[in-house]
Image 1 (cartoon, rainbow, N blue to C red):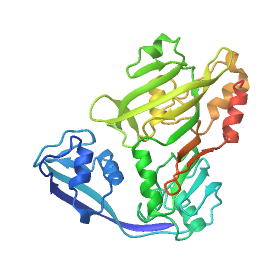
Image 2: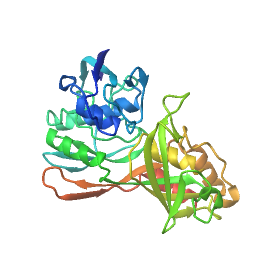
Image 3: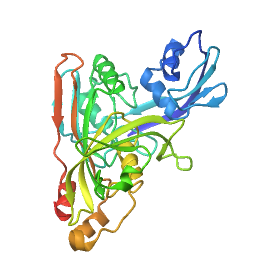
Image 4: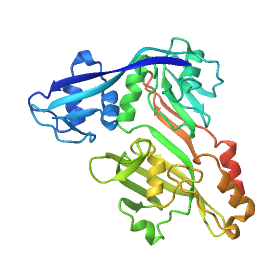
Length: 346
């Protein structure tokens, strides 16, 4: 469990002469050192609408800054925050002195938040690793370099040293980390479908690879959701290819999806935008009735009651930040997804 009292600090400063062409880079250059805000933290604060430029909230990291712009950043501070170690079993795929790779189960939150103060991956890591987690993320997020959603299963790398944390964060920021997901979606996103080809932001690359390129931003009316936008959002690119059509004829598909960028809910939002929402996704997927003729009564019922977004982080590859060795890990799909595939005729 964890406990905290929360306060806010306003960091105010002016951009110095000849700022970089992008706001995120200007913030990283000119933010006062005593604020202790890393580049990745500044990116999160931008996305969370915590940055004002001349009194106006700005979320686009590529916004053009000007000399003399007055920046205000609202930083949430957790006072007396204590996250307890909890003896929660972990599926450890790899571990050394610098990092640990976990196969996260569905239903586990990565780090504590007001609604989930305990039972998280961080609580489990504190028990497993003791004091050997990187402190860069603060007490609430020690060692956390990236996240996957609570109901998404699969691979996650956590830093155990500050050196590893900075090295891994740089790779995620440069989009050089290999991340492939297995997803089960409604419909079959095929290049032969003129509907998909006509969707703004959708195109097909050789090999029947669907490319989705948009901007993403928080939903105007539901702050827990993301939405596709075309201005003042964050650049997002997802690619997907069909691994296996499901049903006769194909009314669903097992996809291999990979990320060029890593935005919140990116695969889920992008596939929904293309009309191929994930089965079981309560936020973006929509509950569709599959044809009993195509998948049988068992398949239709399995899709109807599937309790989570059918998404699994299957592959994770990166350069070890200390040894410089290229590492690549794979995690097999969990039983609930393999059972759904079988029920749908896969």
